[in-house]
Length: 476
Ligand code: ZN
Ligand code: MN
Image 1: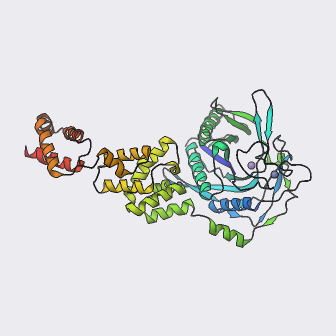
Image 2 (image 1 turned 90 degrees about the vertical axis):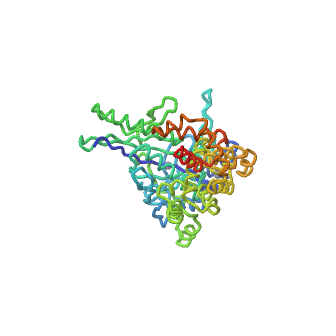
Image 3 (image 1 turned 45 degrees about the vertical axis):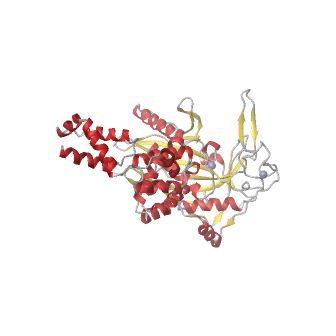
């Protein structure tokens, strides 16, 4: 056994509530600077916070979705900071009594399902934004100040960059499912910090935990983890060690650089937020929130496995987003063949989405049109290769498969007489191929098939042609 990597993640998610967490200002991304502000979120003296019920509800939804234990009484604490974009001088957060305790999220890794345990989920407020201009001036925008956040903290159960990526993707899709955030990393509504160290059991050495802050894409999270993993191992191999420090990922240098020595919890001087009374969570309300949650990803996955007889992996991919799952189920109503359908969706459709870097919602092809196409192939109206070609056309033009097939005259030729005549003719013209085939060169059949496909512009029924070629060669 060599080195083992231990990774814990802290993920901040901006909640898409209507209002900010402690005041009545609008919670909106991209508004004109400093227009969604008031004495409360600007931290003016004497202003008092009031907890937004929707923010609390969204936090509870997350707790339910991630199988956490929901606290019966919500308390908040002041976390002292000096930051120019946090005018109160402290952030209202939660210290030792988070809204949600524990919990877990399962990811699908190569050798099966792996459970990543959560430490906690707590609620807190976001800070404003600093804009640093080229002439060296810094500007402050307080629109984001007081936007509700949940912070999800995992246990150090993640052991590689790939597992971290799978976890983040699963987490993002789960949050999207329960409708509490738009989870747009590019707009900062999902931000990730990485805590990492490595241990070597036999050599009895381990590195000190370093933190890499504010990773704003899954790609940079993966790169930062790989970089740190290597740096930690190299230092240990030299007999040195890492420091407990906070670093950031530099996109241009492609490396992590030090920001500051790590703060300990005591540096924040946590103290109870006396301006906000403790809030009791009534069982009836909790129950109501549970009842109104949509089917969760892991529930949907299990249902897909049972209802459509799909494997773990297929069910996991197909329930990756609510929209993709709905797309699959809508087509299934027409096609009624889950194996065939999952092949088309997991193959051609998902490949297309990946190539174009888009979500299923942006696809031009309706479930009904894709169902029609699959049925045309299934019923032998067009062959499989033509089907794939038609689908590519559908992606481009958004036209229905019937129209494309009609316009381009793609109906499969399954007319026995016509094919027979053609096969005889091709065989007559290629005696060498017959000879080759009889001498054990199986490839000769491929060549002959190619000739027929060329003549029919790919429309011949391949199974019929193949059989005819073999039958007729054996007679010659
Ligand atoms: Zn406000
Ligand atoms: Mn935080």
